[in-house]
Length: 117
Image 1 (cartoon, rainbow, N blue to C red):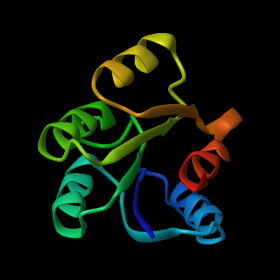
Image 2 (image 1 turned 45 degrees about the vertical axis):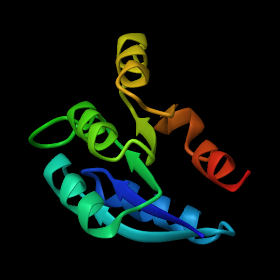
Image 3 (image 1 turned 135 degrees about the horizontal axis):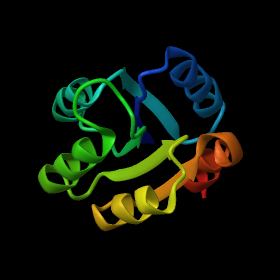
Image 4 (image 1 turned 60 degrees about the vertical axis):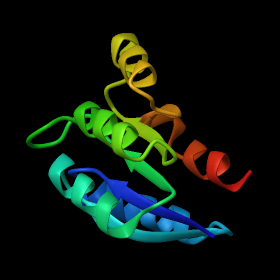
């Protein structure tokens, strides 16, 4: 069972992801966070296997959270799921250690595909 942490400042996006992932076999949502600080605290407290992370959030960015997660917990799979689908963000996230980078508008369901295969 993969433990999943969802991090997005939009409660609606978090709810949608929870609903989508709750239906998937082998996945368990262990927590949610609305910003990078909450994400880092939750990673340390909940030890998830996967973090689904947005880029734009209040306070430090998702990219800063990504870098910290990968530095402190390199075994955690990080999926960037964002509306910031610009090539420079994609390159920056992948260079910072993101395992996947998906666009919320076009690739939302790919999160489930990646986690259940």
